[in-house]
Each structure stands twice: as structure tokens, then as C-alpha cells.
Image (cartoon, rainbow, N blue to C red; front, side, top):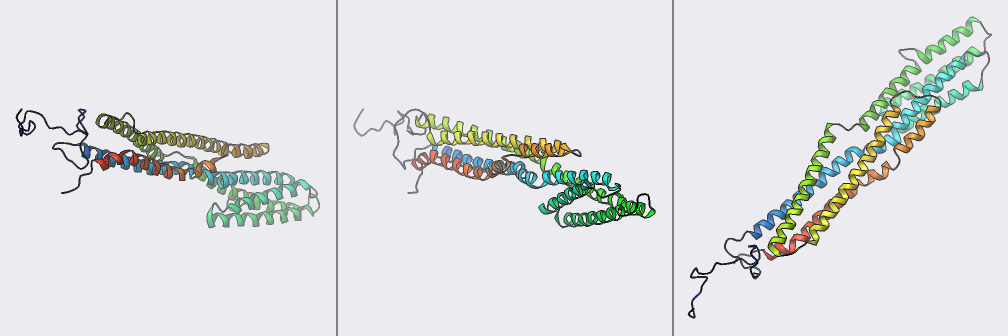
Length: 336
């Protein structure tokens, strides 16, 4: 070979790209661009895809998680106790009605009336039904007072007297009149609260679509992480990329925890709905109160984990960025 002859320029040897051509050639200098190299473009595409999938997955997971857990705390603190309180009031008033016809006032009657009034006040205190519900409960409380007065007036009259029967008849109409009585009003409120429980515990089509989209995005992100890891191994002869491995581990752990929390919470909400879906009385009320508290235990803590989904998503994006940034910077071409 004569001095001054360039075998590459003469076409006898192929030009190589070093890093990026996958053939094990020598590394090229930073900023040097060989004709036909696609490494910079391939890195940029994978970089954008990883960040986009991470952002979409974070948003989808957050909304889907909130869709389930966002109703758990209102169910535990408001809707379920309201249903139990209304069942208690209905049962207590039924027991009071059985004692209303006694010849003399009884302590059982006063006790049951007191339980009913306290239960109605407890439902009014959570303000779950809004202004209309609060107004309806105030009306019920006032009617309970009227009912007690009429029963007391009847018990002051001689047994078998016409006036006694008239007072008792009016008291019964105040309690059970189909149009405006206490019991029909309480049953209407009970139906509204049970409907709220059904809404809060349902896993409707929108939630199914949200979780399906979340799982598909998670699968796509995992595949993208694996493909990018294989791409870097081929092009840069690096067996593992720590940033991408850490992002994948965080993704798997975070998704597993959120799915587990969601299954636990939804199971507790479903058990609560089944328990409250029928009228309860007597000892069933005490059992239902304890069971509901057990079913919905820790739902508030799990609901608070929604904020960590956003933090976890940002960390996954940061790890993916860190894993690719060094290679992207190496293939960043500046205009001459």
C-alpha cells in the first residue's frame, strides 16, 4: 500500500460507525457523525416513548385508584353509619309503638324514643343528604316530639275511654301515616342512603375501562423498558442499565401494591353493601356496626396512598431519564 493512499476513500474498506452500528467497532469521538447511523434517532425515540408511557400510566393509575378509594372513606364515615342509624331509629320506633298502648307510661317507651331521637340526630349530623335531607330529618325529629306528646296524653286518660283511643289513634297516624308519617319518611331516607351506598361501592363500566387501560399501559411500559435494555446491550455492550432496571422494579412494586390495596378496599366495600342491603333489627344492628367497621378498616390509610402514585410516576420517569441521558448526550450532534 503506497503512502498517501486511503483504503476507506478508495472503497476497499467499509466505513464504520463505532458505537451504534452494532458490529463491535471502535468508539467514535463525541460529536462525530458517521453517515447512515441511526443510534441518536433510536435513543431519542425510546426516550420519548418511555417518558410518555410513564406519564400516561401515572395519570391512568391515579384516576383509577381514586375511582375506587375515593368513595371508601365517605362510605366508612357517613353512608354506612347513616344506614345503620336509620335502621336503629326504625326499629326503636317500632318497639315504642308496641309500648304506647300500655295503661301507664313505661320506661321502655321512653328509652326507645330516646334511642330513635339520637339516631335521627346522628344521621342529621353527617349532612350527607344535603339541605333537603337535613330538612327531612328536622321534620322527622319534630314529628317524634308530637308523637311522644300524643302518647303521653293518651296514657293520662282512663283505660278504655274514648279520649284515650282518640289520642292513640292520632299518635299512630303521626307515626305511620302513608303520606306524612314518621316511618314512611324514615324509610324514604333509608332508601336514599342505601342508593348512596350502592353508588359508592359499585365497580361500573367506567372503572373497568380505567383499570383495563392502566394494565395495558403498564404492560406497554414494561415491554418498552425491556426492549430499551436489549437495545442498549446490543449497541453499547453494557449488560445492564441500572436506571432502567430500577425504573422497572419500582413500576412492578408500585403496581402490585396499588392492585392489592384496591382489591382489599373493594372487597370490604362489597361486603359492607351486602350487609346493609336489608333492614336490620335488634342484635343484628350491633353486629352490623362491628362488621362494617372491620370491613372498612384502614380504607382511609389506603386512600391516602393515591398521592404516592404521582410521586412514584415521577420517580419512574426520572430513573428512565437517568438511564438514557448519558447515551443521549454522547450522541447529541451540534451544528458546525
